[in-house]
Image 1 (cartoon, rainbow, N blue to C red):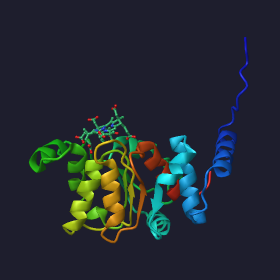
Image 2: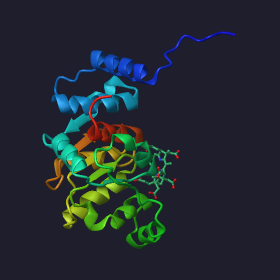
Image 3: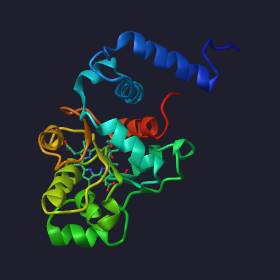
Length: 210
Ligand SMILES: C/C1=C2N=C(/C=C3N=C(/C(C)=C4\N[C@@](C)([C@@H]5N=C1[C@](C)(CCC(=O)O)[C@H]5CC(=O)O)[C@@](C)(CC(=O)O)[C@@H]4CCC(=O)O)[C@@](C)(CC(=O)O)[C@@H]\3CCC(=O)O)C(C)(C)[C@@H]/2CCC(=O)O
C-alpha cells in the first residue's frame, strides 16, 4: 500500500500555508493588524490575488476587535458564515446569531418584498448597536442593512461586507465603502467574497495569528 507524502499535523499545515501567503501576497498597503486579517481571508479563498480586492476603513480592525473583546454579539446573514466561526477563538464567549431560519423571516420577506436574507435583519433590532455584522453571502442583506442604517437603525461597531456573486455583490460593497453611515467597514470588492472569507475574517478579528 502506498503511503502518500503529505503533512498530517494541522498546525504545521496552517503555519506553512500562512508562510506561503505572506511570501506571495502583496500586503504592503495594510497595517500589521489588517494584514493579519487579510492573510486569513486569502487562506479561505485559496487565492493570493484576492488581496487586491480587500479594503478596510482605517478604524475597522480596532473597532471590531474592541467590540468582540467587550462581548459584542456577531450577526451573520447566512448560517454558513455563522457555522464558520471558531467558537474557541471568541474572546468573550460572544453570541453568533443568524436569523435566516427564524420562523418569522419568510413572513417578513413577503411583507417587505425582499429576500429572506434581507428580511432576517429586521429581527436584529436594538442588539445591532455595537455588534459586529458579517454579510458573507447575500447582496440584498447588505443593501438592506444600509437602508436600515439610513433610516436610523442602531449602529454596529463594524460591518464585514463580503457578499459574493454576480448580481448586486459588487454594487452593495461599493455602496458600503462609499457611505457606511459612520460604521467602520471591510469589503472584498467586485464579485469575490463569500461565507468562508467572512468567517475567516471573523476568526482573525476574534484572535489574531494562527
Ligand atoms: C441569489 C442568491 C445567491 N446565493 C449565492 C450563493 C450561494 N448561496 C448558497 C446558499 C446555500 C444559500 N443562499 C441563500 C442565501 C439564497 N441565495 C440567494 C438568495 C435567493 C437571495 C439572496 C440575495 O440575492 O441577496 C437567497 C435566498 C433568500 O431568500 O435570501 C439561501 C438562504 C438559500 C436557501 O437555502 O434557502 C442559502 C443560505 C444558507 C445559509 O444560511 O448558509 C450557496 C451554497 C449556493 C448553492 O446552494 O448552490 C452559495 C454560497 C456562497 C457563499 O459563499 O456564501 C449568491 C451567488 C451570493 C447569490 C446572490 C448573487 C448572485 O449573483 O446571484
